[in-house]
Image 1 (cartoon, rainbow, N blue to C red):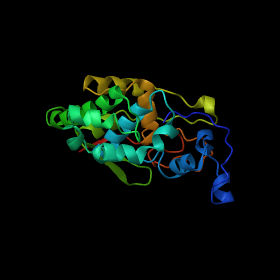
Image 2: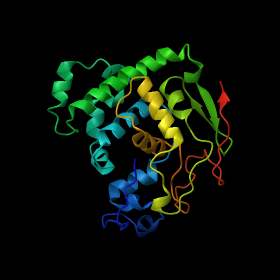
Image 3: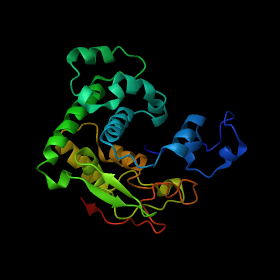
Image 4: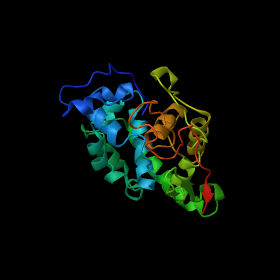
Length: 241
């Protein structure tokens, strides 16, 4: 998610003063929904194929809109796109598209709906391509606590192989980048493999959301939550399977 600065004022419907007063990135205090997302999801590693396919699609649907708009409709998107199962969505027909364009619970954009279907098909093609392409094959990413992430072949390997060796260490909003050399490279790679609505800024937001980079502010209670990066911002090297 591309962070949009908010007032930082906690909403009155939060349950406890302690929760309201936790140090957070500014946009996370925009509403109870955003705080819940920040506290329990944003920046935690997402490594499954379906999970990454979902995030690619939702970030694409966000284009020109706020993340709050998408997050409020996430359950509806999941219903509309079969819990983002690429095997199912890849079989959507023209009739399915027309039905989705009548669904007021999601974003009724034909280009974005078509992109989600096309991205499902591209995800399946990456599975097949991984059998021959070493760059698409799985690997392990050691974590700071001695555990590791097992990155599967295909879309997960393509996305996570672009994890930078170091992550930013922002202390205020203007120190949080909106793209990086890695997001530019990943956007280019995804487009090469047939994905759409995957520009460098959109992909950097994806990388933030799924833990590939850590842009939680220094001092935030969620800084280093992914366990990928050490306090100095460096990660361990990939380990080939």
